[in-house]
Image (cartoon, rainbow, N blue to C red; front, side, top):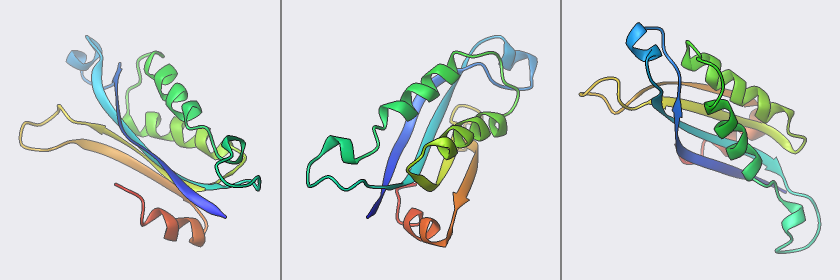
Length: 128
């Protein structure tokens, strides 16, 4: 059995951007992800049978404390690379969004997706 695990709009302060004013202080970045995870067999309501999403959240929080990063694409790729190393994950998407760039836009961002056809079908149903 497989399921989709998601993290929606985790708000983290990140030192990100190309412009001098962006280098002066961290900006709010919203991180979202959806991962297709293979459930282990172990019976109903077994915590050992599912992925602990604390790992994903902790990775993002640690990344937010790293050096200045010029591009959202870099942040997005680092998170996606981490997710692809997780043994039970067969596909997913990661999205970054800067919500405070334009007053007339909800956000600007980047999204990376990966996985086989089955994973992509499942991800189409995940919250965006």
